[in-house]
Length: 122
Image 1 (cartoon, rainbow, N blue to C red):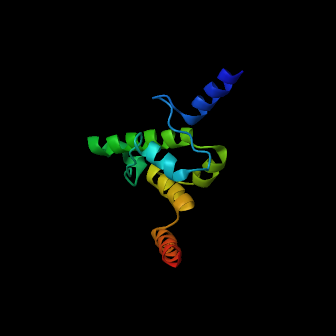
Image 2: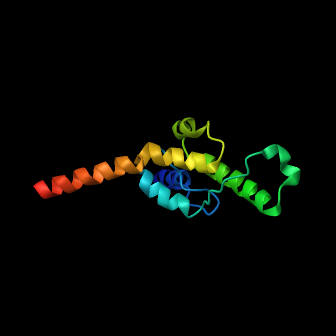
Image 3: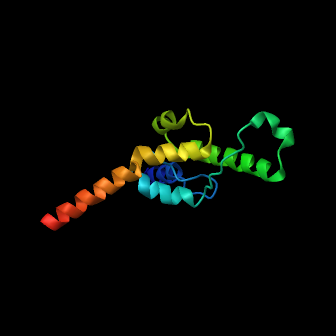
């Protein structure tokens, strides 16, 4: 019975080389570092209808974007999917998750300033 729990936890966490690390809404910073090692977000060309006119480089970008989107979809829970389901590119998906769990740079700066202030008071 204990082995089944351990095996289930391993598969949920995405410890294989094929399955990405799983994100369930907790510890985003930790997941982000693990996920970045297996994904590279690229911006696809603006107009996918003219795919016959794409250069080899543009086709490669479209393929990478599709792979990263698929990777992200397989690495998140249903609740996280709801947050990024309206995004068109992997970059938009990634940015949305970053802002949701880490805030904007201004929020981060404010938080750091508060921690420094608390430290100085201590």
